[in-house]
Image (cartoon, rainbow, N blue to C red):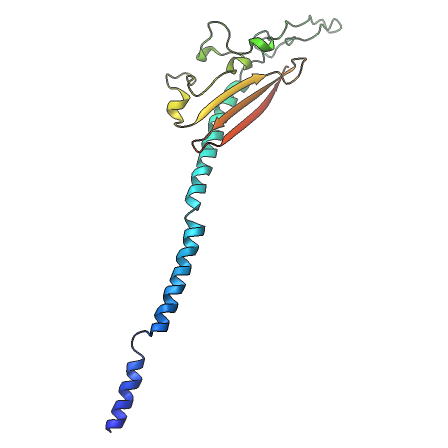
Length: 187
């Protein structure tokens, strides 16, 4: 009977607790899981911030481009679309006179005495930057888009001045420069 009781104690004693090998294997598995989390999951936070910066960059550029798109092509173009358009040749067969000369490349930018809220043609936006006032506001772009840099340039991509290239460059807080380009035709 004593031998039988001793046998039961040994059997029941073995089923309680963990062995040293089981503890070591458990720690190795846990270590591998933590390494995988640290290398795969935690860097996702940095990528999420970059994505947010790109979205805000697109938002800023899109708002400016929408505003520019609503303006006439040139100071010397009729506000209703320009008949005739600036730089257009005379069309006697249609009874159309020649258009006024388009603004020279060296004169692209706001006209004399023109302020932000009175921009009326595409090239007035040449030189707009983060320190410029926002439309109908006393706020600057830098006050609403902290740590973002903005630069707008308007140029003629060809010699005949029948289109203007609008380039909006936005630098994100992480230093990434994203340029949004659009072509506005003279019509």
